[in-house]
Image (cartoon, rainbow, N blue to C red; front, top):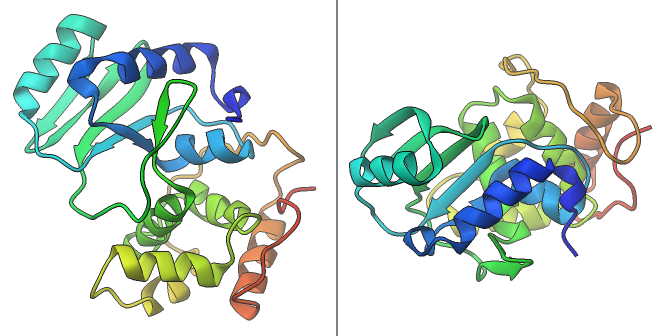
Length: 214
């Protein structure tokens, strides 16, 4: 069962409307909001919708503007970003293959936990600027071992060295986006996130029982 308490009722309704729309039938939810719906570890507000197929971005912007009141739009090839009902939304073509089939539940299409884990490690390895990515990987350790995540990363991003996310996982100097972490199960404490990440590196195949919260 999805943890719909992890998003607001407005976000949930907007997401379901988008998922019902035939124009968006190839899009699926990824990122922190998808993970929060799976795990219920924290609140999430953004909607990241990916597709494996190329699309006409200017036409998509026009459609989303007319149908849903998209505002603050940014458009480039295979990318539309903006705001719908005060919710930040991204529609993006993602070139990398899915490791598992898209999961559909409650009218919502989501990519798999393995795909999310691989993408989170990629985000940390590529930039490491978002605090929530580190928190999400630490919480993912209750479902997948770090070894599982690294194997998913290797399978999804062929030719990319798994050493990069290993090194980046405990390098915090580049973190710039420190939005509040609103936990749903326990209280957020960065020292526990750091400890969990360090312990994951020491025990690559361990899956943990609890979230790293107090």
